[in-house]
Length: 102
Image (cartoon, rainbow, N blue to C red; front, side, top):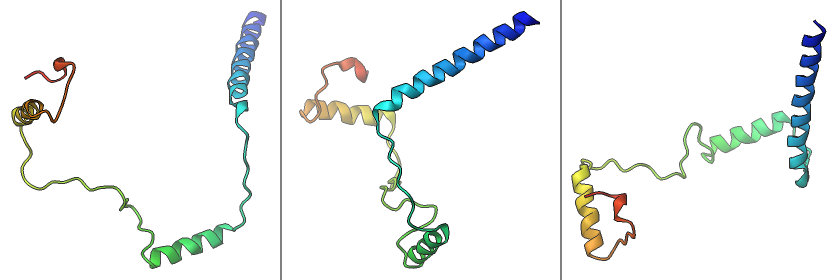
């Protein structure tokens, strides 16, 4: 029983020591604490006002480009043929041709 307790304490000590070392590595960065100047109710109110004005949309990221799904997609063979033609035209230069086997 004493062996199990001693081993448990040793393992716990190692875990705490490693956590302390990991925390010490983060000590190079200053911890900046910015106190809030608004209450939660004020923030929620501002959010609702912004949503009513159309400034914030829920569940969407309007700034990200949308995927283009116009027309059928190209086959692998067609893409490789376009790549080969772009290489011949000098538009694309590959130093290692094993990247895209033709």
